[in-house]
Length: 153
Image 1 (cartoon, rainbow, N blue to C red):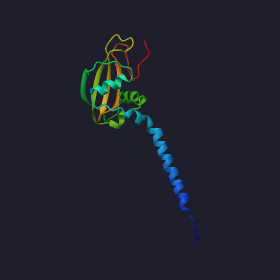
Image 2: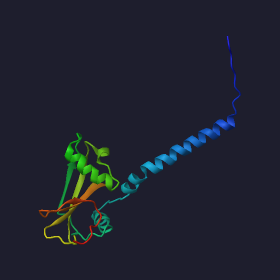
Image 3: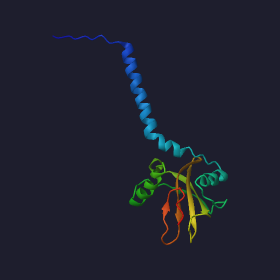
Image 4: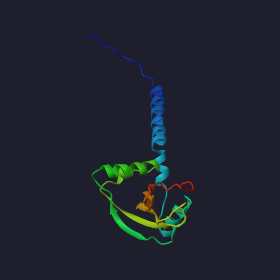
């Protein structure tokens, strides 16, 4: 029978564990940082929502043209995946809210560059936090885009 023993230095083990924990915290901060930045937009009331949109340069009507509850689909589809790709490009991810009901507020945009038809900004809100949304140009060749202001047409 062969018996092996090893002398373990507790100080070295604690140093290694501290390094591993530090590396994990750093990875979480780096990988989750974008999402945290997006999720910090607190919008407890209408003025906050209008201010959020104006922070992107949008001038909107001060009252929403629509406000209602919507359910984020529990089952993913091609349409959901395309829309969620737009959300992810802004630091949001609607898959975290799959199957839940959230508030949707729609505001008319008054300063969309070159707009010939109405343009609307939509905010998706859960627990007073912006969780997603878009700006939609309803013109025939219009598009759904991120909150960022487009260059002048």
